[in-house]
Every structure is written in structure tokens, then in C-alpha cells.
Length: 327
Ligand code: 2P0
Image (cartoon, rainbow, N blue to C red; front, side, top):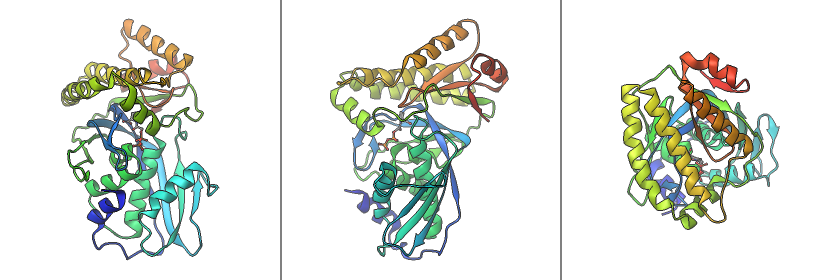
């Protein structure tokens, strides 16, 4: 089963009615509280475990797509045209190859209001916004579950970026991945805050795709990861239902650190944290000792995402002046 087979299953006979232009579509970035780390299928981006994320409000990607009468695609990122052989263009072009029903070429404009490739899930919101734009361009009128599958084929975590609030990516068990997509959780938690603590905005040293593969292949600790996720998933769901912030914070931080432990025990080791990351962790733990309900999560990069409640926003800002709090 390859990506084209999955797309044929979803689109069936829907393909050939492009509009002349597409409106811009927005998709939010998402931060996993229970992480996706490791695939059971590297081609279809099928995960080993479920994961659960929170969206980042109005931080994310806005993407438009149109068909152009040219020999090649044109990609713009934050208003700058991208070289055809840049990793960004090559990845998008390969994805769009899956949809070129009449050899058409596209102009895609992506506008991000988050730092690119700094562990802030820019590929997730990018692919989610692109899928929404394609759905509009071709007037497919697909369901959110179907769009979530299409987004997953671009980047795994993109399947969670179609929703506001909490999203649960169900790993699924089928080889074709038709049961592996994200759904929104009904619970809203308006007082919950995420703060972006950028300790290093540069590009990451190893992309998460390769890092996941290496972890699955070489880390002895990886065998425990699925058990940890299963446990954390139950705890997090209870915490969300009960609006128990301390439980949410504890299980999210523990899950993130456990994911990083599997990576550190890969070979060669994968260490995304730098000295500033670790210093920030110690500062958070010290503030917790003093009674502040402050936790963090960390993705495939050195930056931390602080987790706290709205009532503590001012004090968090006081201790971390550079933090960007998402409302
Ligand atoms: C997550 N990450 O759940 C985890 C936690 C990073 C750490 O999903 O290969 O860009 O495109 O499926 O989704 C980043 O990996 O990887 C990611 P692909 P993706 O958010």
C-alpha cells in the first residue's frame, strides 16, 4: 500500500473539478501532550501509538494554492519564493505529485506566524493548511477524518492540526491506515495556557523523521514507550475531563521527558536539548518547589513549551520575560 493507493481510496471519482483559484486556509500548529514518536509504517506515517495534542490558537500556517500554466510549481514561504531544489520545495512538490490529475502545476503560498523548523510543528500546520486549500481548490468536500488522513500522508503530526483545542490521533490498526486519523475532544479548557520558550530558533540538527527511525531501530528503551503512552493517555484523559491541571502538567512533562529518554538511548544518541534547555527545566522545577503550577513539554528541538493556567500568566512572564504566551 502506498500513498497513491490511500488517496484513491479517499478521493474515488472526485478529482477533476478544479476551481480557478483557491481561498487561503488556516490551520493551527499543535503541541502534543502525549507524543507521537515512532512509526509502524514509514511511508504512510502510521504511528506506533496514539497521541494527544493541544492546538496553538491563531499560531500556525495560512496557505493558498492555485493551478498555474507553467512547467514547474512555485512555492512561496512568508512571501519569499523558494528555490525549486530546496528541501521545502522538494517535500511539497513530492506531496503534490500525489494530486496532479492532469499534470497540472501549482503555486502555493504559505504564511507562517511561528518559527520554521524550530520544533514548533511548522510542517504540521503547513500540511494541514495545504490539505484544506486542496479540498477547496478541487471542491472535494471531504470529511475532517478524510482530510486528517491526507494531512498525515504529508507529515504525521499534521493530522492533528485540523482542529482547535485537543485532538486525539488514533493510531489505528489497519495496514492502509484508514483508521489512523485525528478527532477533536469535546472538552474545552479556556484557562489552559501554552507559552513558547524559544531558547534557540535555528534549524534542528536532525529531522524528526530520521530521529524516530533511529530511535525505533536502536533504542532498547523504545520497547517501553508504547506502555508508557497507554498509561499516560488514560491519565491525561482523566485530567482533561476533571480539569485537573496538576495532573495534566505532570503527565505531559513526564511523557515528553520519557520520549527524550528513548532518543538519548538511541545510537548514535539524539539529544535535542542544549544547556539553555536544561537550565530552563531546572528553573521550572525550582519554581514548582516554590508552589507555582508550571510544567513543560518539549518536542524535537531545544525549545520548551510551558504549560500553566491563565491565572499564573503574569508570574510566568515575570520569570521568563521572553516567553510568548498563546491565548
Ligand atoms: C509530536 N513530534 O507528537 C511529536 C513529538 C515531534 C516530537 O510529530 O515524519 O513532523 O512527518 O510524520 O510529524 C514531529 O514529527 O514527523 C512530531 P513525520 P512529524 O508532535
